[in-house]
Amino acid sequence: MSTQEIKRVGILTGGGDCPGINAVLRAVTKTAMFDHGWECFGIEDGFLGLIEDRIRPLSFQDVSNILTRGGTILGTSNKANPSRFAVGHDADGHPIFKDVREKAMAHYRKHKLDALVVIGGDGTMTCAATMIPMGLRCVGVPKTIDNDLMHTHVTFGFQTAVEIATEALDRLHTTAASHNRVMVVELMGRNAGWLTLFAGLASGSDVILIPEIPYDINKVCDYCRDRMEHHKAFTIVAVSEGARPVGGEQFVHKTIADSPDPIRLGGIAHQLQDQIEKCSGIETRAVVLGHVQRGGTPCAADRVLATRFGHAATELLARAEFSRLVVVQSGQITSVPIAEVADRQRQVEPDNELVKIARSVGTCFGD
Image (cartoon, rainbow, N blue to C red):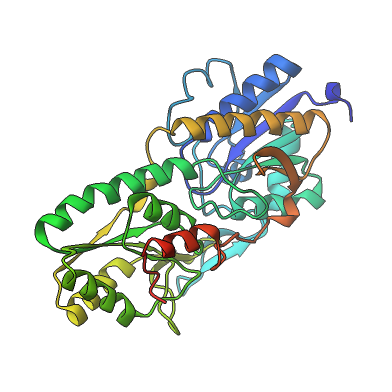
């Protein structure tokens, strides 16, 4: 396909919101308009908008002055999976799922879209991958504060989340020191510990607990007591929501039956608070950062990365290189097949360089 054959491009954002999405939308739309003369269309609320036919033109004005805005001007959804879409409930209240990919593809064709730019994480890329054999032409942009997409060294939104989490951990040092307490801080990340590892190392957290390294609560308590006995009046524990004890399971906050990813992790900070206080005798408090990690304006690094990703995605379309995800490898922008990242997560290796460095400066991983 030549560049001239693409005339109309759709853009959607799936999964959770993330700092930098609007920067990608801006870069894709402006590059498409200025460099290639294409028309751009925004699909509202991710794949839900494609299923419900909520597709609207994007103008230059729509994407102006949004570089610094958090969230997404198009809206997003982490529950709309076209191949398994909840259409109602049975008599017992259980959700009824239906494959509505043909309906979504009909709307794709109705608006005469030549391709989509799909912005999202592994779940969103999985949705896209299932529709590629049906004729969907698309390219992907990696979005998640969890930094857990395969084959890319960094995703946009991650650096902003690290900054937010680090600042929170920094602030808790003073209150922990003032009261001689252990402060347990729960961070996001699902099954990957990148956010907790980076923020924990950056803030000088004393204990870092991540999903990839199961922890022994007795070793954590011993570490806290040892600090107190050696005139270290407080301890900061940075824990990923997906961390789990040796031989135990992750802590599930709730299950959302009609979601393609029904498990919502959470609650580990309060569990650790009770356990540490009981076994160590040290006053302990729990803090859950939650969605504050995903909100607000993106940092400068994420604005630049998101803009690079958006431009690269548009250039992939111009070269007719479909079904690929824009990634960063060794500092360079490149791409990989979407199928290679769909339904997979990149996790921290226990012998990762940052884990080794943290251990060298005395950080406890509970193992």
